[in-house]
Length: 146
Length: 146
DNA sequence: TACATTTGTATCGTGTACGACATAATCGCA
DNA sequence: TGCGATTATGTCGTACACGATACAAATGTA
Image (cartoon, each protein chain N blue to C red):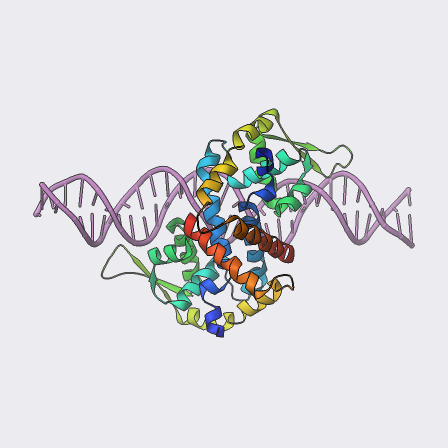
């Protein structure tokens, strides 16, 4: 591959990564509409459904997002009454994010989403083994870049 | 895997995809700063360096972006005098996007970027073969979702 | 050749993303 | 026990992303 060819869109790994991410995110739109949350908001809920009551800092590490992205996002989730934001008593600097009852209840509605997405992505050209190794490479990239 | 486990962050393919995309995009920041462009702007330039003079519609298809994203982005590139926007004479509806001299010259400065990114991503745990099959799976996902 | 439909681009509103910077609480240590 | 450094979160400005919608140019067709 010549230097010029390296500048071709497809030869930059980041480009298909960027496109695949956006296209798969788009697929969640209609499903998440029923929960009245956006995709990043859904990711926060996933993190909280897995482990309730985390600080903003813990969530930034979990989601690889900066606080300046997460803070307003969390405020919107608070407005929707899915989470609560409380200053920690032991460390006044940190803010504890917890699910409200309504936020916990939403989990039941969300249970069907992974399956529905899997159906949309599923394709005879991608088998389970391929998906597994794809997933492992993704993890390595995140390790290296994160 | 139980239904509840499917809700775990890591078990949703979209999540590592989303994280990997953002983290790799972040890596371009310092390199692109020298060219005074953002990452999506860089993608537009890559497309134009490969094939100069495309309509907005052709670029949306190439980059999988909507016109409402691309239009303001292109106006910013025009302000930086890297591209020109001209109504097509044969079809007054379409707008031709072309590189200016300054935009063409920028290509020389960009030639070193793919190599520098490769160095950053390169890791003994990811070999060329793995990267190739990873890339192929990405393409399939884009095909299915696009 | 009228005129409904399609096509190509653009505008608007909302919600991420993130760099740079601000601020208050906590910590480390002289 | 002060007090500078660190930590946790937040604000601000800029730039994507995209759904919904608008609109003029082009097209198809009766």
